[in-house]
Length: 316
Image (cartoon, rainbow, N blue to C red; front, side, top):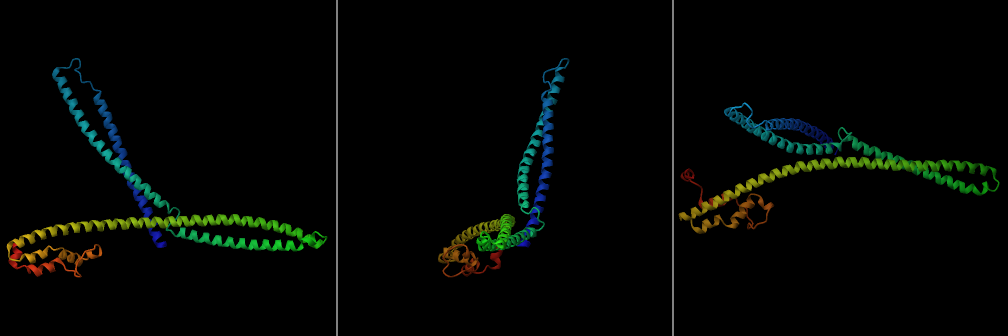
């Protein structure tokens, strides 16, 4: 468990740092893009404020040329603003995702805060258990001592209150000892409660680290499982395509009249398919009647159509 926690904690800390660095990079790019959009917006405002009406002393040709240049500049600026805004939007989406990733990585790493490799959490639990055991032993001894003092007090109480000076002196001593002992027991009760709380807290930290490790393992294994599922889906789709093509070829073969229909019909029979599925090992994952046999399609089909000759292979 310790070695697993050690690897997990180191990994979470590294992951938290990588996530923080990635977020910082995108955050800087986002700030730069935001400034660019803001600057372009300022330029657009300045362009929008330029007069379009003909100015005093301006010829008709000069006015038309100025409007054309203004329109061209506005169009170019609008394109820049659109591109910069799209980039800013994309960075904003990425920024939000990376912020969430960073916070999640930090929360996971926080489980190991104050620990270098997970050993501290286990050591803290062990130390807390030792402390609880030690205080419980002291409290038991204190209780036994208190009971012994109370027994002695009961034994001499009558003599002490009947004029026995020695018993009186001892009773007075017992009053002091019992008071001190009662205070000691109360302090031990408080110490025990605190020690038990420390043990509970230490166990909670260890349990949290262990759960975080198992969650990390579950995420890792789930990713591998989904990868294999995708591979299986691709293989099944390819198998289905091959079977459709095989069925079409069986139909073409039957039309040649060279092989009897009773034989070619076997090529597409459900039992033939089931036995091929069983031969491929799919019987572990689905139920189908295979008649107690498992036969690959290639082995089955060659018995019906024979092995291809050189000319047949070339024609294919």
